[in-house]
Image 1 (spheres, one colour):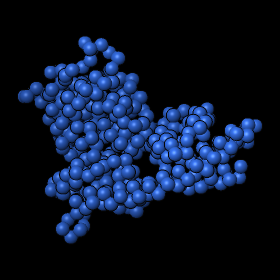
Image 2 (cartoon, helix red, strand yellow; image 1 turned 60 degrees about the vertical axis):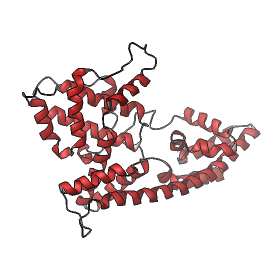
Image 3 (cartoon, helix red, strand yellow; image 1 turned 120 degrees about the horizontal axis):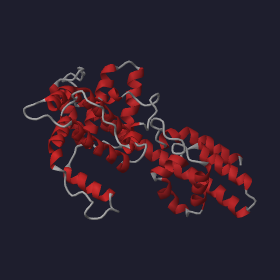
Length: 335
């Protein structure tokens, strides 16, 4: 079993590339798989044909477990515990096959992160002045250029992971200007990803309510929410620095009539439900969009006329409470 434990040590060194870091505090029983669930995965993989193993391991849900040294240590424990020779041989073969598979994945992941770093560098370069320097806060022209670059770029999980790592390093090095630009990148990404399209929203709601009768399925946005949708779109199209002024004007006007705060929060709640139900749990995309919407809710509440506060429903509240306040980033980091 010494070889299996050596493999566990090897995976510990590579797990930073293989596994997405746990983003904030996840509920107990979700962040760390129980031994029963891990054992079930080991049994499944042990009986998977070697040529099918790479495809199985490449799945995000599987990779987050397999790419941890604890997984190999558990294989070693099962080898020690079983008296079945054939099962013991399968466990050993699984460990060897996983070692080769993970080595290949590490190489592919490294290449993907290198590509993501270059894509991010190209995006950030769009905000530079002619002499290559950055002036922070960005001018309206450079902010628009950065926004356009983010929209044109393929901002995927690898890029968002690179932004997260670059932000931490810039903070540690005292590079406040770069931190501000990276936060703008996240803001522009989230605003584009969370753009509200009524047709898409109703289609997604219809999909999520597949078990409902045809009469109960949503087919269009209620007319009462049209004004709130227009306000939400305006917020997504403008810089977060302008949100307070936009919200004060929209929520407190008499002519034209003010936007109903409850309706606006309902649109935000619909977006939160999309993030909860349609995004991969724990992904960088979910984290960035979650914090963006959290900050938007706070801004709406702060700029609306005084009244009894509205409490989000259970699903939204559970999502807002997903991250431990001591571990999650400050919402202002994203705006």
